[in-house]
Amino acid sequence: MYNHRCLMHNIVKGEFPCDKCEKIFPYEKSLKRHVKRFHKDKNKFECELCNRGFSAPCYLSEHVHRVHENVYKYVCNICNKGFIQLKNLKEHEKIEHEGFRYTCQQCEKSYKKEVSYKLHMKTHNEEFVQAKYPCEQCSSIFSLKRRLVLHVKRKHSDWKGTACVRCGKLAKNMKRHLRTHTGEKPYPCSQCEKSFASFSARQNHLRVHTKEKPYRCDTCDKRFTQRSTLVVHMRYHTGERPYSCRFCLKRFVTKTLLKDHRCKTDDGYLREICT
Image (cartoon, rainbow, N blue to C red):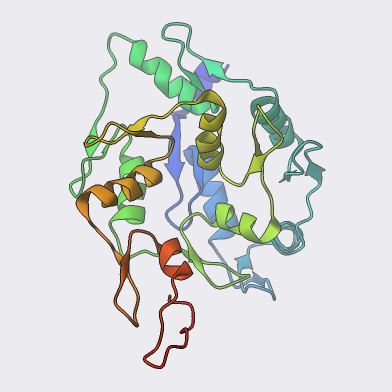
């Protein structure tokens, strides 16, 4: 039935990003429904707290509960992450807490998302030709043009992100930024009781348990668990000190060392913390 619908009605599953926000949808129809719901007739039903508009009162009510009141109909009993639909909660529990993955039987690669798994399976087809979309401004290469467009928007354009309705700061990943306000940490460590606000933070933490140190210094062969630590380490070899005190002009390898720095005035008194 699914194959029939795809062939007869030209339904293509892939990745369809919204041009007005950061969401990505598996079907073009889902994207159109999202645009109609959130980005058309925006002034018809407006939120009094953030001035965001909606096409229907039910969508406005859902927005207020979810964004401003942090109220969800379905909540995970393990990490307290909230969901609008029951199927999303079930999928979250299966993937994040039960460790379910879509695994390729030919090369054993695994994926959290079914759409990513199906796109990967195409690479094992003899007639499949991997499309490559290189970024003209850096060395990044993407298999989907839409991914390239998002990359250019986030990394090489003047776009600084969306303003947070709570603090006014610009964030390129608003969903992740809002966790700094809610305290939500939906990524628990499978080896200990710690939880993290982002997937990448958890991956970095897991190296504490696995003892993996994938980042190596080419000068002294010392290895590190995080790339950011390697970057700081390399400054001791190169002599780079990118952070300077605005009073005494002393330079430091990290912003933290600069903030901890104190310098004296001409009459011997300590100045305020340097920033």
